[in-house]
Image: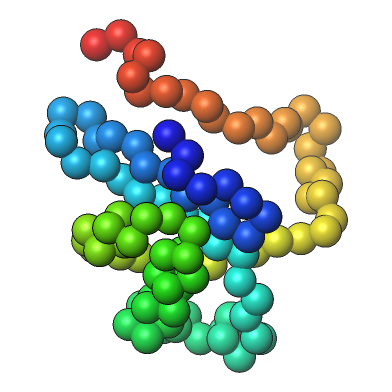
Length: 104
């Protein structure tokens, strides 16, 4: 269920199968310098994670942020060009499998 959807932020929480816990996923559009992008330790840095959480907390309920555990950050790169595949018989598709609709 989406918690926030805007130009710069997308947040969703979804239940974990056979658990009372939820996974929280957030995609935040954030400009980083070339130096920051090359610093792979940045995404594990507590100060950086705090600034990201601070930006996210402006758009969703603070109690959600306070209850997060095992937080991980990953860069997502954006391109204005569409990647052209060399093999004409290969297609890119999105996997929209919903585990709750699968039969056990």
